[in-house]
Image (cartoon, rainbow, N blue to C red; front, side, top):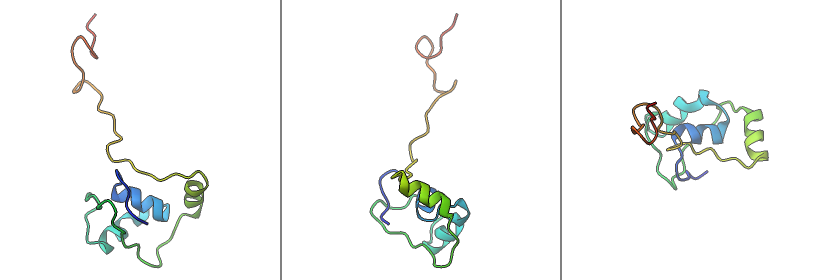
Length: 90
């Protein structure tokens, strides 16, 4: 698998194994921190013998889903509101 745009290491782990439990193993095999961003186009090492969640993998494949969550968080809340635009005072 090649890392796609906006994929975190967690995304790669879920796409490849279907389980968050493998995140540390994949990070270690690639000399990365779990917070590091894998390079787009790189092919991360997935250690042999780790357990896969077959149900999750089947679901992702059947529905043609490739998880890519980097930048998907909405910036919302009082720290991002602008008075008179998003934050209405009545």
